Image (cartoon, rainbow, N blue to C red; front, top):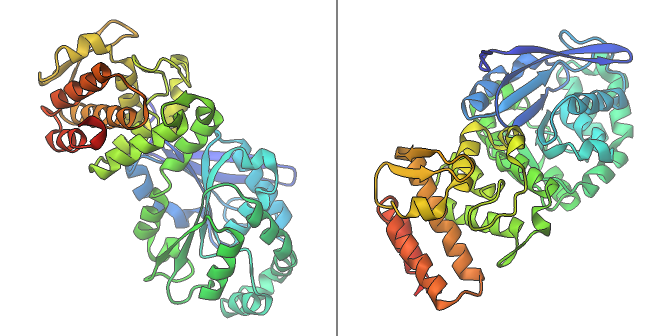
Length: 401
């Protein structure tokens, strides 16, 4: 069996160069694009944290850097390289670009076929609305202008296009600013947010322009906040927003239930599982977004541990399993296979939290008979054996009084 914590070599052939890189980890994919003058190894301490948090990380040396061939004389070939990297990956990547890497990513996203493969964009200390004189001075102060003057001038000529692409992005966007020594000013951020008002901005104050080098753990934690993006992208791809459900549609229901479990202190695994908790259909809601033979697709979006919880929740034969509530471990009958599995510890707690949150959202938004509403109260009360605080809060909700 392959040890996924050990980096594996990757390569992408381009018409004029071969791009060299590596991948490590398993779960939602993060494509990491380094700054000009750097190499992919700058991401190593960032990927150590991300892999430990359940991400799969892919990083290449950009053209003309490190082990990759080619010459970075213009932005267009760099953007085409990013597009080629993304077409070599599963759909639903989070793209993280620092400086040159971020600008190349923005340019690549001008292509609808590329955008369709991306779950969201993280820009690390770079914005598309560059001020020419300040940008030239910033590069010159780092003794890089002479070697890269052709690329710098080409990028500056592309600023109107980069601004237009950014303004048209309908993807989640996160801007990670550095502290002193940043290339990004407060005015730049204001102008950026006018282009992309849905973007989120966070700051790593104890880092210079090369955040990955100065504060890799803080940067990894900021990137980790994008964990839900691949799941949301998959739900949209599978048409969850077009499936009717009490309170509107299935997509809205899934997000509301996730908000409930987050409010009750559920961890990242439970949060991601809750967001996709009806992927295979449930005993009470049979509409499946994914057939069971496509379980690897969900694992790619939320990771193995979260997907295993989705399977348990969807596989639950409610009449058989609910009759045993209060037992610990809880014998769960798998309606897909007929097998009985024992739920204990974190699996049992997360299963119970998800059940309580799902039933509460249904009670809040569905038109229910008094008997059905009474049945939901009884079920949530039984879950108090595993999650007493959440059950008490749910039972106090006006929809269940």
